[in-house]
View 1 (tube, rainbow, N blue to C red):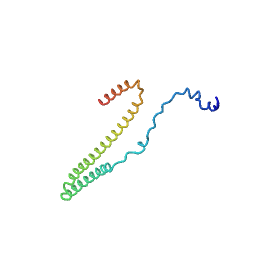
View 2: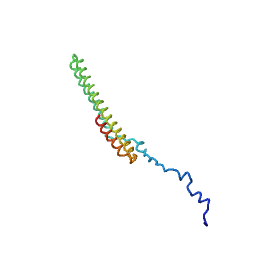
View 3: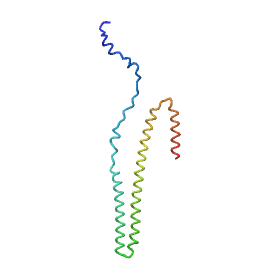
View 4: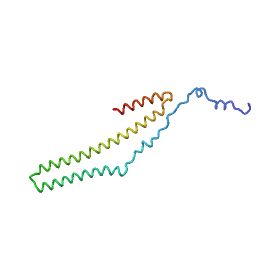
Amino acid sequence: MEGTDPARADAEAPTQAQQTEKPTTKAPEVDKSAEAAPKEETWSDRMKAVGGLIAVIVGVVVVGLIAFAAILKDGSNASTIATGCAGVVATIVGAYFGVKMGNDRSKDAAKDQKAEAAKAQVFAAHLPPTEAEDILALAETAARRATKL
């Protein structure tokens, strides 16, 4: 065995620990760039919020001007006019904020649902093949029960 260096052959041979180690599966790296950069609001989204608020303000100002003009014309009915205007203003403002909060909550719920669906898909992708059918049947049953609530 000319030309073979025994010290070099020992360095290249796998050690006992390396031979008995089982290969480990490592979880794939998660791309955090999608989480780090929140979705930017579009111009139309900003205008919806500002436009709705402007509409409420204009509505309240118009009702106030009508009430002011009615009081100037006939001061004896001032309390009746003020009461009617307060009811209209409260209705306008309440409707605006009620609809706005409902829309915001719907967006949050849809976003949360997408996040949970993505997590479920990752869990499903890592199922052991021998247990996949049983677990998928359980998942279908749970999904049917959740939609019946």
